[in-house]
Image (cartoon, rainbow, N blue to C red; front, side, top):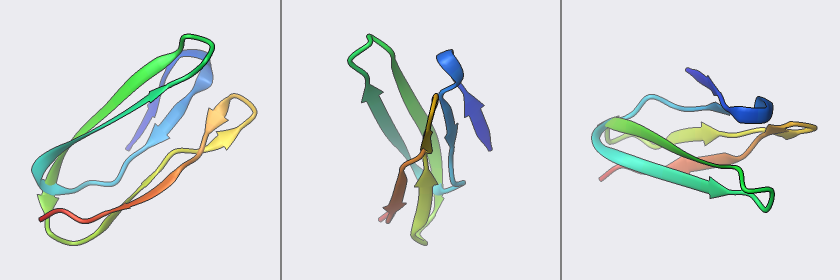
Length: 65
């Protein structure tokens, strides 16, 4: 799933289960956003946010207990 935010900031998220995870990124130009999703499995998942010109790309591996 892909979320496009202000100024073309795009966030891609992994589907997970059984808990809620919140990611918040704040930028010096007063842009901030919160990414929330429900966790649905105990398998490690990857969250990717991309940095490229006006896009952000971050890879985060997440383990849901």
